[in-house]
Amino acid sequence: MAYTVLARRYRSQSFDDVVGQESIAQTLKNAIKSDRVAHAYLFSGTRGVGKTTMARILAKSLNCLESEKATVAPCCKCDSCLSVNVGDDIDVIEIDGASNNGVDNIRELRQNAIYRPARSRYKIYIIDEVHMLSTGAFNALLKILEEPPEHVKFIFATTEPNKVLATIQSRCQRFDFNSIGPADLAKQFKNILTQEKIEFQDDLIIALARLANGSMRDGLSLLDQLISTGADTLTVELLEEFLGEPNREKICELAEKIGESDVGGILEKINELMITGLTPSQIADSMIELMRDLMVTKSTSKDNEILILTEDEKKRMAAAAEKFDVPGLIYSITTLEKLRWTIKNSDNPRALLEASLLRLGLSEHFMDVQSVLSQLDKGGAVKIAGVKKNIAVKAAPVFDSPKETIKAEIDPSSIEDKWDQIVTLARSQDEGLAGLIVRAERIDYKNDVLKLIFSASDQMTKLLCESDVRSGRITRLLSSLIGRQLRVEYQLSDQEEEPKKEAKKNTPTRIDAREVLDDPAVKTLLTGLEASVVDIKEE
Image (cartoon, rainbow, N blue to C red; front, side):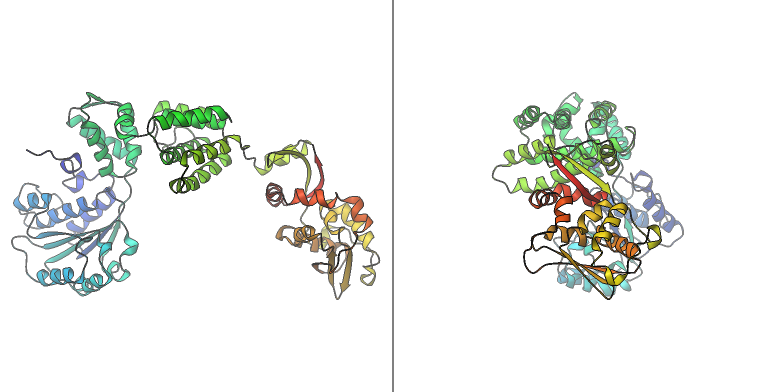
């Protein structure tokens, strides 16, 4: 007798046997009990979660010959139930939407649907991958789907419900199947191996549940492959050896070397993994998965149900997570995700992988804003873009109204003459903003519009003043000092002129300042802190 794979042999036979979709099963049972079975259903969900199985169970419940009417507990022994199980019942027609997707196929279905079932209560059409039907085929379905004969039921299954026409969906009751949880998968795997009388390690069950990724069929297919090896006991090592899965421990060791910034160790661990036959793309995928586990471990407790790990793996993850911080792990995951796609199109994928992982290992850990502020308050130095710089940063206060500052006794008509006095008062309120506006070569005031005019070579200062972070604060500060509601505008002079002596005296040399201010890392820091550069000293 031919061997039957586990996915078929242990397919659920009744609503009570369904794994991971109990709420949908209960809803359908209630519909049958109350005689409110719809004429069309749409089952959507990823592969291997039980859509076709549920469709067959519903068909058996409606057509079971041992019951006088539709039942929630089909006998699974009558001719109708047995025929539905193998997919060759005369009244339950299963159609592959991918290969029967034309208008002619649906027209034939409509012509046959008008005839009553041969022996059962209903003629049931199960169309798998219904989203593959052409637009013409969908339109051909509309009329019979809206007003079907009393003896016809439709059950559609799809992995991409967004491709099913809205006019079709509106005529169906839709059920979205969830991915099956790791606990349900592990329980089912244990039951099957126990019934098959096969010895196994508990860690293997957890590894299989992780690899199944919510799909019962995928998990059982992997289990079938392991059983076919003929081993007396199924182990995690067997899974890694015969299915080509990366060694979890070696992947974790690679992550630890990255956390320790061990350049040589990173290259050695990559070489060890590639010797086992793994491709750079597989290593990148495994690193993304492991970095995700580290991120969850770092963010929550190690006993969190989000993690699908053995007890030993949880302890290892907790120790490895101490070498990282959450922002750094987030950055690593996004970098590796981009790397996956680049590797596939690279002629030198190994070199690209090694360079990227070394980059992660050599990069400094991210610091949150509070840590940076704390370090700066203590007079410490901050490493930015690989260069250690003493950057004095002062977060500028936000002036919500002119009442928060001291007004100056300045006649608006004399603003241009007393600009130096205004700048001096601004320094007492916000030295950072004053350090920017003082660099204006000249000002122009008319009708409550104050123009700050900068040298043509000082475009960076103009851009800093115009930024969303500073523009409003400068306007509020000057309005408060002068005692009038101003509109502040910024522009560059038409010709290059020598800067004011006051600006030159109170600011760094332009070449040095521009070099630092153009640094992407400095821009990020200033924007994140809503701060201004007061002084720059390079070691």
